[in-house]
Length: 217
Ligand code: ATP
Ligand code: MG
Image 1 (cartoon, rainbow, N blue to C red):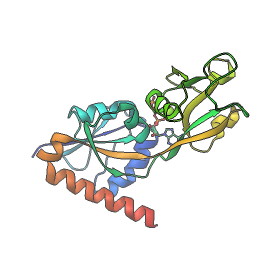
Image 2 (cartoon, rainbow, N blue to C red):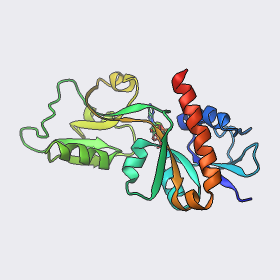
Image 3 (cartoon, helix red, strand yellow):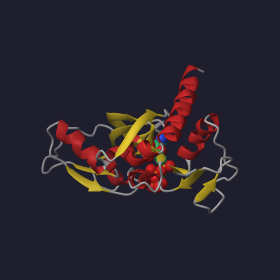
Image 4 (tube, helix red, strand yellow):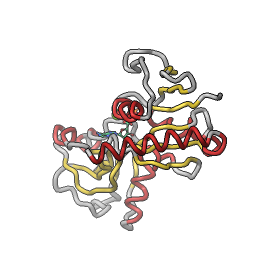
């Protein structure tokens, strides 16, 4: 029988997906935080885990290099398109996508002299958000440490993920506007959905059960 490959990223998604996978009968002896292996075996010889960057998960799954994957809604919104099925909200790695800045920063899209500048890793989400408000802002793409941008005058505002708000607070910033709630989703390759239907739906049902049991607990 063919292998079912599951794409996951290290860190919070791996940690929080692990109990859900365990409830679906999938266990791995290896710890991606310490192992350098990118392909992890599981107790089931027909199931493998591939460990990749969070933002690469949709790409692997869309191209069928992995049959299924776990990806944050933020990553899926940025990836865009309809190349994947997204059948289940796993309810893990929850946070909010927010506009943030120095306290009192206006949210009107302009300063006296120019358009407001928005620094973010989430260019599509930010563009969509400000366009929906009818504001023409300048989006500046960054790859991390967005909190720095308003402090050094690179940007007026940032769009970033916020969980507790402590990173913002540590840098003298505050959340100013909620864009959307974020959690991780199960994504499925479209061909795998057809060709490996029994196995994919069995995994989906088991994960759905685990998510439901956790929500009820
Ligand atoms: P990389 O480190 O590869 O650039 P990343 O920083 O997005 O990627 P993680 O920090 O592990 O990787 O985040 C993975 C996912 O977890 C994100 O896509 C998002 O859905 C979610 N996430 C990110 N930050 C938080 C947070 N502060 N609280 C809860 N969930 C978060
Ligand atoms: Mg990170």
